Length: 107
Image: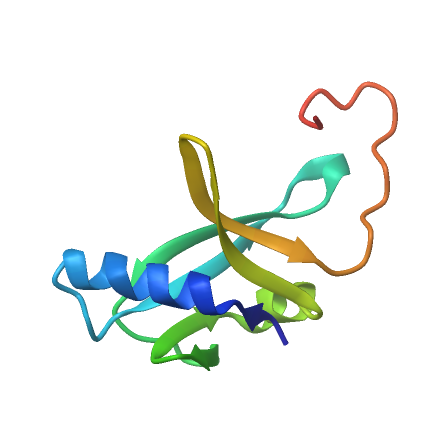
């Protein structure tokens, strides 16, 4: 199961409150990423869909489908601030396989 850091939970709740959506949650989803593996995205969502797994941390609810949940086992959602950049990141888990030559989307 994915872990949510305290700071990520607090920042997400802050964003939801600013949007007037205190009772909503954060949705994590995956898209196929080619040779680099899956890409992860986040959005806000009013409620979990049927079959979603729900992780709660400090009053924040995080929704994800079964496939995404399986891919995120052992990983953590965190919020980082690095100078002028800030945002949510997903870290940890198993090392991903390296890309072969000619993979222009890897960086």
